Length: 136
Image 1: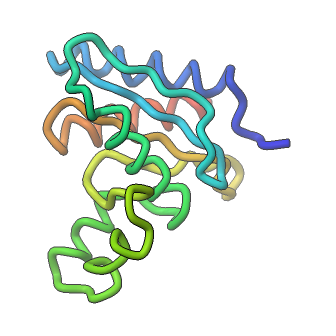
Image 2: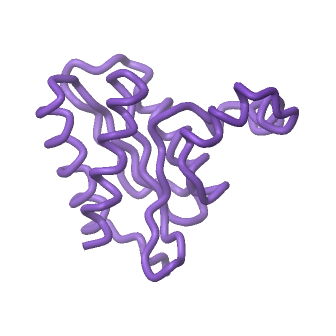
Image 3: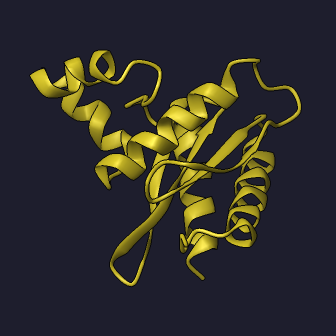
C-alpha cells in the first residue's frame, strides 16, 4: 500500500487551489504516488482542456526522478542529451516543465504533485504549496 493516500492528496489539492486563488490564476492539480500512479486529479475552473495531461506529466516526472521538474527544465536548457530525449523515450508520460515537485516524508519520496494552468512559476508555487501541505 502506498503512503500517498487520498486524504493527503485532497489536502494537497486544496492547498494548491488556495495558492492559485491568491495568485489570481486557474489551476489544475495532479497527485501521484511514488510510482507515478494517479491518486487524484482536480481540474480547476477556467483551465485549459489539456491541463490534466500536463499537470499529470509534471507529477509523474517529479515522482520518477525524485526532483522538481523545474530542475529538469534547467538541465534541458543547458543541453543535457538525457533531458532532451527523455520525453521521446517516455512519450506522453512525463513533462520536464516547471510545475511538478516530489512529496518527501522522512527523507523518502511518497509521491509527487504537478500543477498546470498558470505561468511556469505560478504552477511551481502551487505545487510547492501542495507538497508542503501534504507533509504537515
